[in-house]
Amino acid sequence: MIETVRKEETAILIGINYPGQDNRETDEYIDELAFLTETAGARPVKRFIQKLAMPNPRTFVGSGKMEEIAKYVKNKHVDLAIFDDELSPGQIRNIEKVLGCRILDRTNLILDIFAVRARTSHARTQVELAQYQYLLPRLAGMWTHLERQKGGIGLRGPGETEIETDRRIIRDKIALLKEQLKKIDIQMATQRKNRSKMVRVAI
Image 1: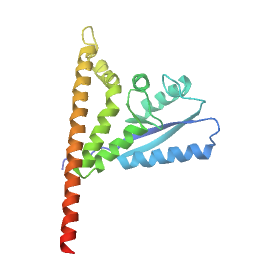
Image 2 (image 1 turned 90 degrees about the vertical axis):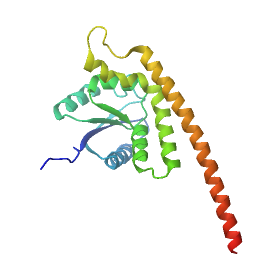
Image 3 (image 1 turned 30 degrees about the vertical axis):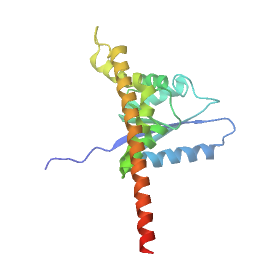
Image 4 (image 1 turned 60 degrees about the horizontal axis):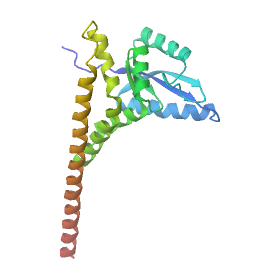
């Protein structure tokens, strides 16, 4: 028989212990991130926590910790690196170059879970809108894996023209989804009004 079961993805969890935050509180945040990771269908295999006053603007954690993480990712063939805070577009690009695996932050992870669990058209549209709004400022970082795959002169990624085209497409999609939400809200309001009339007639 052919094996059709999807391979379970492995994930490492990365967080910061901020000043005034005790270890127990930090562990609770990472425990919650682990729960979200499992809910999304991945298996947490290791946690990396660093004491910092604020996230490194380039790589979230310091360079030494990032080297330690990169070595683990390479040796263990980790699929995902999930960060406990929201990452900037620049951080995503820089981290992906160092680690060479898929990068998620807490916001992206939660949106992914919502997308899987959304049942009504209203919920699905809301989640899709949130995902596009999250994606828009991070578009440039999404091309780094293509740069690595193609390489060579004239093939160093899609360039600004393609990224700007994608930005326009996503902005149009966001506008369309907002219009869809308005229509759904009107339909739901009409249905509620009709139901209330039926109740009054029944009484």
